[in-house]
Image (cartoon, rainbow, N blue to C red; front, side):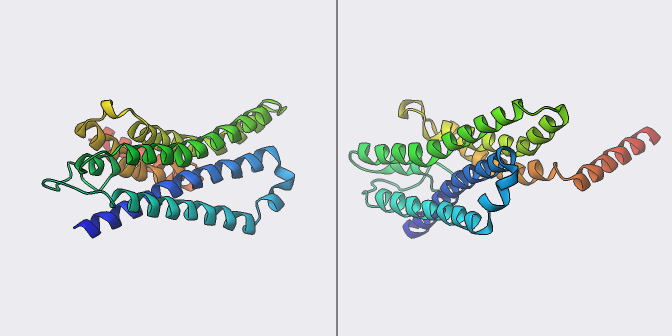
Length: 223
């Protein structure tokens, strides 16, 4: 239904924008932990973390409401069947009657502000981290500092890479098949990989994984 599609779009935009902001907040947290370890407890207190979370969810809510209201104020003509597996922005705009250039511009501006801006904050945080790591005297310290960022960097690359390609491409390069593949990647595949990527830094998970692989290898050899 129209109401169900609007609800789905709102929550999709809410969670997507919130994740962009939360990834930027996580990069800032790592920057504080590596660049200012002695002041970390005061600069990243529970109050600061709560404010960062509130800003992230607030941005997602504002953008979600704005985009959903803007899109569903349009008139839709013909058979309103979306050539997609959920109510995403590009396939909905393709069903709208009349000129949708203003809506496309609004989507592009929102993508620039809410996807690219947090990404630039992440880049600046990691530039500071890299500078701090390069001046560390011991190789063990450098390795430990970089290992704390590896999982976050991988998640950022997967999420921002697919999201940027999906929403910052020119309209002429859009096709239903490519849009579906990219949407499937950043909605399902990336979300599925996130807990695996983050848990692989846990020593207990590593030990359990090695035991499982070792047991399988032993059973294979016995056969």
